[in-house]
Image (cartoon, rainbow, N blue to C red; front, side):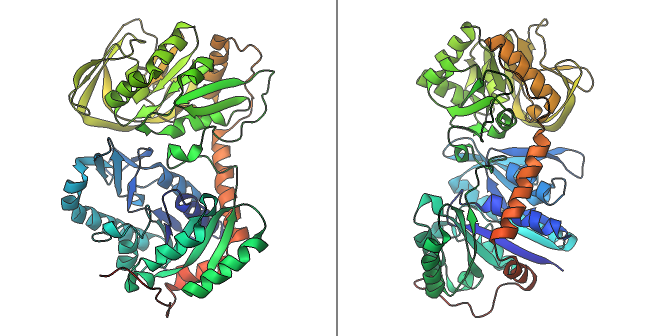
Length: 512
């Protein structure tokens, strides 16, 4: 069979990514060969995939997570178009893993036909290779200002004749208006593909919700396929750092007698914020995102995460007083970690004729290094060791590279060929590697080192924490939620048979 389904949403962060992953895991456990797909993602949270030519390429981190739900290695076709915003007005375009252009809203229109053609071809290849492809939309299908030329939401559904379900986040409030309004703003041909709804993040008595679901069905002629409950454990592999709130996850009680407090600076153009999720899986480690200088002063470890615009975010650090808080934290003898763009900010100088085109700007001066930006982007998996001979795996995505460094600067990591990577300079640490802290032995070593430097003598690293197992538990939980709370028989009928015939039109509809 070549079944398919599009999971659309009333808004961004309504639950499309997690519902898509949950449906994928449910089908995978039924023995179905299933793959995920998102025609276009706009996110600075990406993962590295090795393409057919042996080169590294990027896809959205959410699609890598969905691939794991399907029991698959990530594939560039799972997210053929990735837009990485570098500012409010411009985004880097990554096509089948490779950066091909930087566009504004105006110039994007001229590129869109090429992107749509690539996305449609990738979906066709996946549908030929797998029993089922579960597609995720982007934003909302009711963004009527963007409907012309759309190839991500109803444009994709129309092209591939995909039945569509719309998920709404009831925790935001107004979910019935959002679901009804989403349908009612679509034209008749688009509405004919929308089969029903899913309510996400419900807390409370289902009996109180039932009258609203009944009325929604009478008004639209479409069922609600289920109500997913609020689940505190669904926080790994967040599509956007804004989904975290302030504290990541559910910090477990410390293994020793003291907590380790980690403050992560929420940069305006933060990328790959998921790097700190691995730290948050450890008992006794409290990880929070912040923009408050006072919170950095109180933390045991400060993390400067990745950035899609290193120089612009460094300027923001200075404007907000956070740069002074970071340097004051180090001056007090407390540990600091910079990852990718955050690592670059620690240098004495940054030479950037590429990303910001600002030329040479001073860094924070916390490492005896200089960074130079290259027009060619480094995108590759990373394998090596850290903390002695502890194995480490990660990946690199960056334009900037270390162009000068004190020859005596100790590296934080080593590549498999023995060459050094990053820095461990007193209490200051940095690396270009994303995902390094998902390696359990290295993460434990780093946290033990951090606690010692911060004077947290009562902190003890738990011996058995496995980040990979935590991710698998999350995926299984998503599959469980789908099996327990959705009408999977009706979902299977949709996937197998396509959109139901005779779905009623809900006025006014968008004119075409």
